[in-house]
Length: 271
Image 1 (tube, rainbow, N blue to C red):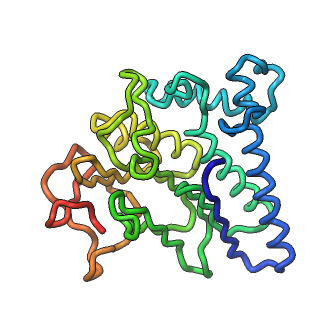
Image 2: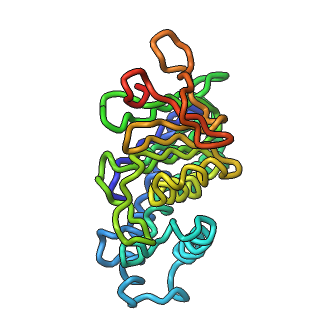
């Protein structure tokens, strides 16, 4: 999938069973990679893009992804576009969707405390210990050894799309050029495939997408702009990160109902 994947199983099951579940998870990711990798010449996504594979002859998973991408294109006013780069590339949905499927399978198998991290897109359930939530750090856009936010919860999907690792790789489909206005968009919800697509669409929209992101039903957002402003929705599950343990403080610059702007005294994003 072109990205590192980490798995943490915290449910107290026998070691042999945990090892079996872990192998099943990574078998699934290997299957997804074979079908959807844009780097493998004979993957379904590349054969489909070259016209060598019809939608009728593709796998059920491939058809599901194609249909989901079409739905997300409509839901995001065209900003989530699997054809934005000029070829069919559903990567902005597939990574989150595949992690969501893996998490759902673990839950069904009795492993109700786990997290899966695929290149910063995370599905977490339960906690590291009974009664304790997961604490998930969101990387600081300009300081790779620090975090911008720490999020806490026991059942959430976290997707982050940004420009700080792969450069300006998200294309604004209306202008046909890379989007540069937002450095990082983090979307928190219940389904990682949808959260992943919404984060990608938010980056593609740029600053004009702040209101759209804030109004997403059932989702919370944290955003860092290219001019070093941080925004987050009221329900964004951020834990205190300041040295004295207090939550980040609001400052002027609200973009509308449900969204507050946050900035440190130096003007840099919170660390």
